[in-house]
Image 1 (cartoon, rainbow, N blue to C red):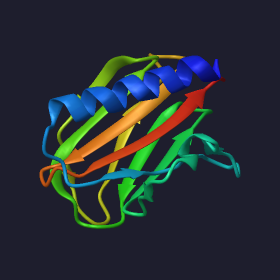
Image 2: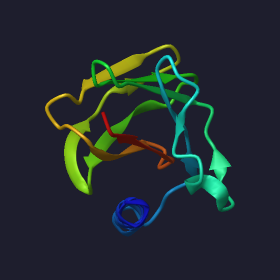
Image 3: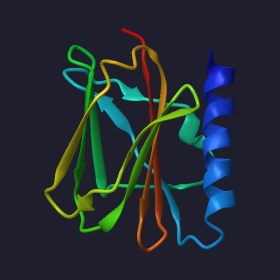
Length: 133
């Protein structure tokens, strides 16, 4: 299961790099599970990278809602969510300090999710989690 997850994450990162030849930076953020100390995934971010504190993401496994809040002004951009390597959500919200966007993932079920947030400045934020409920 971990090999599949890493393969999906690698493909998402490769697709991002191939589609945006000019990007500023790539940041990684953790997705927390509500009412738990679990943060997904824990071992994927061991490679040298920059951790993002501009984004706070929480997955509520009981309702299968994902809430993404912004701790900095990132302006407009795109949020793309993948489940098992397939794009399921593509949104273009305003991403300013204090804004929260929510996504109902209940219709997509269990799987490995990757969140890719791209700002108009070309910065890329990547987070991932597993819904195994």
